[in-house]
Each structure stands twice: as C-alpha cells, then as structure tokens.
Image (cartoon, rainbow, N blue to C red; front, side, top):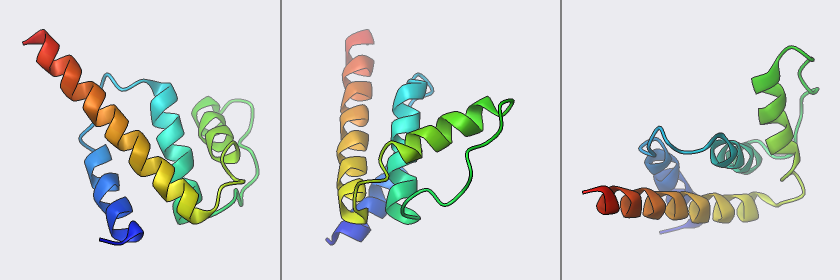
Length: 94
C-alpha cells in the first residue's frame, strides 16, 4: 500500500476517534491533514473573534515546514497513537 492510500485509510479511521480526544490532538491532526492535502498555509489568519478558526490556522501554520510526505507520515503515526490510547482506555474501564 502506498503512502497516499495509507493516509486516506487513516483519515477515515480518524473519524472514529472518541469524543474524549483532546482539542490539542484534534488541532494537531487538523494541521497535519491540511499540510498533507493543501500544502503551506494559503489564507490570512482569521480575525480576533474567530477563536476556533485562529486555533486551526495556527495548528496548520505550525507544521507548514513539513513536506507533504512528512505530514502524511506524521498524521498516520498520530492517528495510530490516538487509536491505541483509546483502545487501552476502553480496555481499562471494562
């Protein structure tokens, strides 16, 4: 399986992450996803009152030095880590 296919597979798996996934982790995934699919930030930073938009923009800006391939690889690694943590947490509560 190529990197693009694996990335797409884990982008789907990311949708199954639990609601308890922290905003920090969600923003990390968002930034890596945007970098992998769009490339470097290509929009102006949202205004003062758009807190969520600014947080997303900042997360994307933080990883803009990564190549598309690096962003894909880091995204896959992060999703795997979060899925493992969710599985471990679910197992420890049952």
